[in-house]
Structures are given as C-alpha cells and as structure tokens.
Length: 307
Length: 307
Image (cartoon, rainbow over all chains, first blue to last red; front, side, top):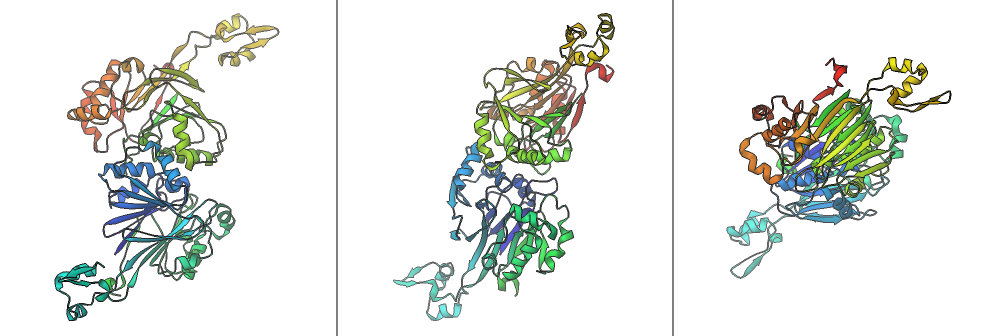
C-alpha cells in the first residue's frame, strides 16, 4: 500500500492557515516528497510521519514557493540522524540551485545525490521502490509533472513450485525476484511468478497550463493531484498569463485521463474558500476533492483492498 | 513611540506552535526587522503590521534559522507594491549569501542595498529614523548584536523663538532641525531647541555566549531582547559548546547593563515550556519576561508617557 499526504495546498506564499503545496508519499517505510516550500518541514512535523526516511525529494520547478523550504528541511533531516544519501530530482540546474540556496545549510550528515532530468522531453527512472516518470509542463520556466508508479510482481504459484519441485526454503527469495541455486540447480522467479499485476499510480502536476500529452501521462492513475489555482472560470485569462490551471481544466485532464480520483491543490492566496468553486470541477469529473493541508489517503493494490 | 514585536521565539527549526526568532520594530510608520527565518512572513501576516514599509532588514548571522525566510519575504514585499529600495544589514559576505539564496527570488520590484558591517569590531550607522550600533558576538561564525536607538531632539523653546524674534511660520522647519532663511536672515535649530533629550534604546542579541562589553552595549536600554536557549542551569556545557546563553546568563547581562526590561527568546526546540524556568532569570533580573510569538510593546519617550 502507498500512503499519500498533501503537506500543503497553497501557491505563491505561505499563509497562516495554508502551507505551500507539497506532497509526501511512502511505500514500505520509505518516503518520497515532491516540492518543499517555506514551512514544509513544519506541516511535515504536524503530519507525524517523520523525516528521517525520506529518500527522494523531487522538484517540479525552481520558483521559491516550491523549494524555499529545502535548506531548513535538509538541516532537520540531518538532525534526525540520517546518514544515508538523499536523492534530489528536478529540472536542469537542480544542483546549481540547490547548492546556491544551501549556502546557509552546510555540514549535513548525509550526502546529496542529484538527478537532473530533461526539461523538454519525458524521463523515466527508478529510485528504490519508486518508478518515476516526468512530463514537461508549461509554466514559463522549466517545470516537470511527475508520475510515481509502484509496480507489482505476479502472484506466486505455490502449486507450480511444489510440482517442479522447488524446496520451500527457496520460495521467499523467488518471491523477491531473486535468482537462487540449490543442489546445483538454478531457479528463477519466472518459474513460479505469474504475469505482472496492476500496480499503483500517483500523479502530481503543478504549476502549468494544460499540456498536450497530459491525459496520457496521468492515464488510469489511482490518484491525480493537480493544481487548480483559481476556481472561478472568469479568471482564465489570469491563469493563462501566469501559466496555471483552473479547477475546470484540472478536471478535464482527470476525465480525459480516466483517473480514479482527482485532488485539487496550489490555490491562489486570493482563493480563500476553494470548496465554494468545487462544482466547477465536479461538473466535469465527479470524483474530485478540494485538497487541504495534511489530507491523507492510502492506495491499495487491487486485491489487497478486496476489489 | 517605538512599537516592538517578536515575530518568533524559536531557535534551530520552526515548530508548529513556535516561529523562528525574529524582531520587528516600527517608528513613524517605518519598519526595521532583525532576522528572517523560515516562516517569518507568516507570523508577520498574523501580526498584521504589513510588510510594505519595512525599510531595513538586519541579520545577526547566516545560520539558516535566521535568514532562510528571506527569499519568500522579499517576494511577498515585492507583491505588496513596494518600489523603494530596501536595505539589508549584516556581517561580511551579506551580499554574497543573499544573492546566493535569492537565486529563487528574482525579479523583485525594488532594489536591494547592502550594508556589510565589521565582524570583529563595533559599527555605527544611521538608516532613516534608526541609529544602529553593533557589537561582535561569539557564536562560531560571524555574528552581530544590535542596538537600535531613536535619538530625541531638545524641546522647542517658544518663548525664546518669540524673543529673537523668529516668525511663527518658520517654527516647524526649525523643529525638524532644518536651517531656514527669512528676509535675508538665516535661522538654525540650535537657536530654539534645548539640549538633546533621552531617546529610546532597544537591543537584540542572539546567538552568542556572553561577550565582554555586552553590559556596556546594552546599558540602560528600554528593552533588551536576548537569547536564552536553555532555562536549565545544568545545560551550561551544551550552551557553551554551541555558542549560546542560558536564561541566567541573559539575566546577568540585563542586570549588569541596568536595562529597564528583558525579554528572553530563541528557545531550543527541546524547551517546550520556557516559563517553567523563568525563575532562573528572575532571581538575577526581576523585570524579565519569557518572550512568545507576537508579544508586542510600545516604548514611549519619557515625558510622552507621563514619566
């Protein structure tokens, strides 16, 4: 199962009652965060998931509201006792920007590793438990949308394992996709695992105008987290000017991508009551929620959930 | 009168119920801030004094908890419509550090001006309404304590002005220390102003061990804001190791400097209830308060307050 939380849901500037947009997910105890604005470490502390096990922090882009909290967050992770490397992922110039803003956060107790991705074409990489894919967004500066996928191995066929026969003490290795040897015979997991099953898919897209390929990128995601800076349709010109999406535009992408669920986030400071405009998304994509700080959900593999 | 507020009172990392240590004061509508950590702009918004009229931001030193909020704060000030220059004051390398962390806060609508002060000897400068003096602190890296003084002109002697005689329409200029000319005669303010009267003095010292000269630096301040990272006497070794002061050490400086009032601030995250250790300061300096986020006070010139 994959736990997902929005740490904040605000755009532009942190507010007394709304932290800046950021997402944290964890799978098998390992964490992946996207974006870390001013105050993200505070809402993370309120969430209570800890910070020591965050292995990956991805950045959509380098506007302050998406990265200004990084120096403080890294220092706090360092104080938590982490010593393993932490991987930072983002558009080109990631290392330059991070080294620059972290001039006030020296002497971390763990190394940083950088994965700079293409700004103008999709990328794919595997980091621990997480398969990441990115899609270039449209926001005036280099900006990436993220898809996080947790693949799922095929079902273990115990009857087949017994028939071969494979000794029971080798089963757990084969279940983990390992290749094992016993009495001079080599056994591989494909001998006992069925075809790969449907995994989990989580998508996170902000800040951007709708881009071509967005629906395919998010297709059949279990959860699509998407910016909706304004709820009001009449603010479309402003959304276009600043490179953002309306609630209705996020809902169109969710509908066209046939996702299971949509969470709206990255609200303008002027949008004091996002819920009052939810209908503008519901008309287009019914399973939409207005995100709020520390909203959480657990995504289950299909048959773990009884479905 | 000089309004003073602590925007936050925490050291090291921002907490859900405690912002990072920062001070704002304002005189005649113009603001001066000292330190701006992660979240300072949020507590500033909660305080409600606005941000457009902050003309000066001073930094004690360049540890993240004292400056990490600057990029976001500058962007928010820029969005407020400010176009006049804003002066930043701090130890050597100020401009280098600020330019570095502000790589994510480009396109401000106002220019920044930098005043880098000596790290190893006292400095004095005048910025608008504020007279600033600094004292080198002891914290492992360059660190400055600040004294903010609002001088006060002598009393206007109306009888003397009439006797000279000086036409009434020139009085307001002379009251403002201007030099005025009337019918070929030049009048200067010293003709009609008495001796300079006692002004206001506000001191702010963090992060530091007690330094020689501290008592003289804060002497007779109306308000002395000083760090007390730990309340517990038995944590003295830790305070020494990290270059900080105990409550009792701050109180000793207040007593020796004969200040009017002491506010403690910059509490360790481990110090969840600073008030429970207040007695360790009160024993030494009775007029001590434990600071809290957005504690405010107005300092009055002596006879404005009826004293």
